[in-house]
Structure formats: C-alpha cells, structure tokens
Image 1: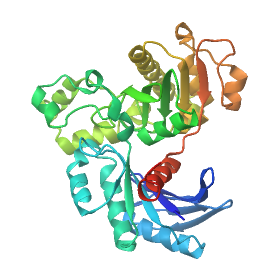
Image 2: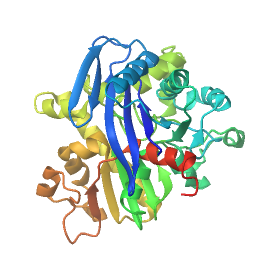
Image 3: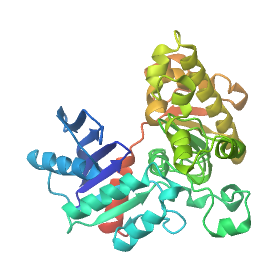
Length: 386
C-alpha cells in the first residue's frame, strides 16, 4: 500500500487530499481545506462525498494542520504512508521531486526570496508535518520542475553573466498543474499553449509535452496580470517608488504581490467572479476584466511565437475552468491564429469548446495538482522504476 496525504498550502489556506493506489493509478478518498488561517472566522472543510464544515480560529499553519489531522482521525483517515507537499520553487538545485530531510529544509529557507508568497507557508507545513508525524516520509514536489527543459535562450535574463551563474534566471511556476494537463492529453503532441488562469495566472508553451517557455520568471510575480500581483512591470517604476516615494523592500513586495493586479485596477476585489458580477455597474471592474483579457491575449501570442504556431489551446485553473465569459473575451480577437470557440460549448464548459474545422483545438481541462503530488510521491518512494 502507498496511501499519500497531499498538502497544498497558500498564504492563508491549506488544501489537503488523501490518495490510495488503484490498478489504474490512484483514487482520491477524501479532500478538504482550511480557510482564513491567521484571520477571524476560520473554517475547516472536509469532503468525503459529503461536505462537512467546522468553524474555528487557526492562528498559523501548524495549528491548522493539527486541526486537519485531528479531523481526519475522527473520520477514520489517519493512516497514510507518506506526505507529499507542493513546493513553489526548487531553485537551481532541486529539479525533481525529493525526499525531505533537514538539509533540504535549510536550503529551502535560502530560496524564500524566489517565491516570498509561497515558500514561507510551505516550509511551515513541512515543519509542522515533521513534528506531528516524525516517522512518516515526506516528499517535496516542485512547481518549477516541469520548466527545467526551457532552453537558455528563453530562461536567461538579460543581466550580467555572474547573476546567471548565481541562479538568477527564469524558473517558471504552476508546473504541477501543467504536468497534469500534459498527462491528461497523453503527452500533448504538437504545439500546445496551456493557460492556467486563477488568482495566480500563467501560460506555458509546450512542444510534444516539453516546456519550452512560460510567462512567469524568477518569481511568480512576472507575466500576466493576476488577482493581486502586477505581472510584468517596467523596472523603472520600482526605481521611481524607491527613489521618489522611499518604498523599502517590504513595501514594494506588499504593493506588487498583494495590492496590484485585478484588486489594484478595480479597487473592488481580486476575485474574477465578483468583478464579472459588477462590471455593468462598476467601470473599474470592467476595466480590470478588459486589462486581464488583454494581458492574456498578448502573452498567449508570445507563447505561440515561441512555438512557431499552435495546434491546441487549453484553459485550466479557477478562472480558466469556470469563467466562460473570460475564455470568450480572450479568444474573441485570436481568429488570426485559427482560434475560435463555439459559444454554446463554451457556455456549457465542454471539454472541447473550439469551433469544428478550425486549425486550433480549444479545450477546457480541470487541473489536479494534488493528484500530481500523489503520483510523484508514490513514484519516488514506492515505485522508483516508474
């Protein structure tokens, strides 16, 4: 047996799932989430076919995981053979899933600047799991691993060479999501652009299942406009804020990662559905949506240029899967690329939403990062030959 507990942590949440092996791969037994960690009105959600909610105060990720494990135990799901963690960045050293030890955790602390929104809470969850279950092996699965194939011409930043040798380069993120989509497409032969659109948003150019370029870079702040992240930004703006407004590093990080994107443009919300609901009455909401879609079209065209054409476009992520209006608006000006969607299929959220007979297949595929964590953990610890 190789039952895997998967942990996917965010700044104020922890998602978790338990997977058991089957003859065809793995089956999810239960899943859940702790929301509003460190905030009033926390909630623990457990879904084993029926949704169960309990209200509580979770001061930090350690307390949240304690509550998760206690709730799993009461539900009879306290026996697992390993814990797999989503880790945003492996930096230049870690390019494949790895069994976690003390040296790895030390190295991870040194990488925090490459993913400051993600790594601190991921480290907290790793350390909490080790304290609560010291005898159970843990595995780190990196969002950067999928992009290790990006060639130097795309991954090198136009900076002095010494910085390249120090590891300052494009790493890319959302790799676990992209891996899942590629496996779902059974290798994604040909030229595929995958658009992972959510609170964090990015795209990847995939040739025959291999990542050759992506929109995020050294950190997950780069690329598309996102929920609270600015995406690509003239570095001169940062210099202006430092020199003229006396912003320090902490203020810059808060501005660029927490106060910008859809939230900054709209002044209303970082949530796309909220903005869609209000765009007819709120001009700033409408502008935020328009800018998001414009940003997505530009970056999609850049990924097509990297590939020299496109055969398949896949939408995934919370927005990509659940917002037909956004998919429609992004695609509405891409006919020159052979991208056109069927309105009825798009509104239904069919798997294939492209118009028949067009040169580009357009699809909507729900992602499953937790399932990829389970697969990597099982392969590393229990099926190393796979």
